[in-house]
Image (cartoon, rainbow, N blue to C red; front, side, top):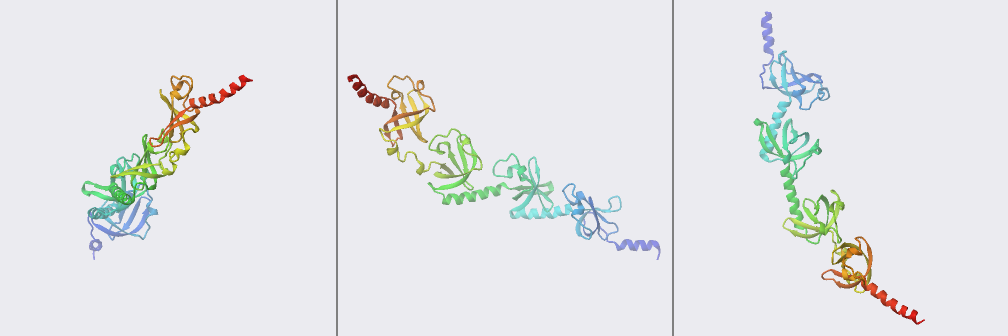
Length: 366
């Protein structure tokens, strides 16, 4: 048998392979940046780091060991050095694309960790196949900073599948919207006016606070935050704070909330607490040209008319009073229905004058 015939026979003993063919092999050596496979061919197969994974700078010796079996795809039968260039990640991506195609057709909910934060959204990987989730489809509310999603496992559906154009789009927003709608339905079915419910402060504005009641937001208007006055809601509430609120009104999908609980109503015992003739102390809250409004308790203001400030003539309240000043006056009128109370400092002066007059007369007789 000639040497040539022997080489030909040896050549024929190896299988033939073609570009694009899927082959099985056994790992015979591993380096940090490449894997060498025996694929039953006259040349060994090589999988470089970049053809094994999309993760940069990974040490392949920590992932693959000699003796492992692998399935890969042929990129080049001869890489220029007599070896077969293989890819592991592209074959995995093809399988991943098939997995995503099925998920797209079946509207399946997928779950995967976020591998990369991009300028316009998030990137996740399913079986080496990349899925892009645009920022507008990440949440049901606008989020400027997406960094919190790094490495976080999220759920999504495939809303667009076009691997030829390298366009596989994920959508997390529609899942959140659907779940929120379900929660809203459940909550509205059982929620009634007068209920007390715990919520979380979601946002605070100049006119009130939005409270998350568990998938449904309710508005706590500034006028309903206290029986008294609230100047700035942002000084009263913080985002994330837990608060128990009263359901004041429900109109379609809008919920009005309140912190004015009946048992804390300062007008509940007004007939007794603010009876006509009672002498009471209060704080000047604000002033007008016709009088001063005196806070007797949070939510209870009384009018001290300019004509009732003193026995002496007073042109305007600010001539003799200041905001924040504590004064003592007599209640001269109470209208519970309209929640109006009238005060008089002059009445106290008159009473004092009446008491002093007999004493002065007795002194003169002596």
